[in-house]
Length: 430
Image 1: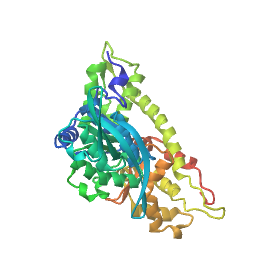
Image 2 (image 1 turned 90 degrees about the vertical axis):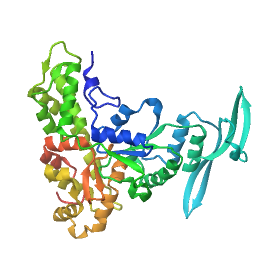
Image 3 (image 1 turned 90 degrees about the horizontal axis):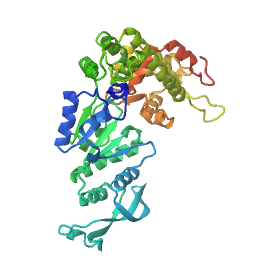
Image 4 (image 1 turned 180 degrees about the horizontal axis):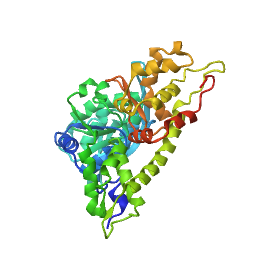
């Protein structure tokens, strides 16, 4: 007997209808076998966390959830804390390198001492014996990748370190970690990084030395056959058949496995299926339409609030009228075809279309667009838009949607009504 939400839907736990895809799962497993850092990327709710849950047991990794306020020190501290390493005392430190202030944490750490190979650390390590065990006390700076690597190696650390929500980190922190990954590799301390973006070599843009040193695993696209397999996996588990409507569901979800899973779940609920059925139940188009309506309402409330936050911009002074680039970008997006949105909106086209409708078109300069696009994700995070909806792909000079539910929202909502309800910024005419 299985519950519907164990078979279909989006969950932090691995669901019953997880399917392995050779282009994704095989690549991930190769990364584990080759002892390389692994970068898993793609839009939200496309199976990044499920991929790690499928192939790694909880005792095989340490996981850190990144946030906009996380620093490298916070991340390294979390790793040490989860390993139950005993920190006897610690002192905050600040140093200046090239005019930049670096914050560190010098700590006295007690770790088991096995003897033999530790002769080289005699100068900085004191030894003690307690309850029949040997220990040594060593000074480490937990803000330094090399010190952390030495510490982890000294306790025979052999797990993977998973960094969830890497995209939430400030760009400077992402850049520093990209540099640190090279150091960790030298000590065979290996990371799995999960991030919401859609272009290759994101971290290599920060550190070119990572090229050919990491394995990148894109979780997109989801092929039609993959989505069909999900319903076939669920058939014997719930005794429910999607054969007559599976194409209809696929057309509605824009290759988002998260949306697909949710529509399957809600279709079951619409048909009165909460657990495994004694008799076979056929899902109908009526059930699917009810599910689409339910998910549209769920997603619309969030996405409309996010758009309102996204376009909000305060003037720096009472006599200034800002350019309100986010507002004009939102208007252009909501008027674009799904085909163009799916491919990505080119920077040049965005600027041209904004100038056509802008209240101060002569003031919309390439530099204004550059700043808007470069800070696109960070501004969304600052406004608590989680996960971010848009990202700028430098390699293709285009804005892409990275929240897979937003495609579903755009296809099914009344876009004219959404535009009409957007708050028009003060000082401009609609």
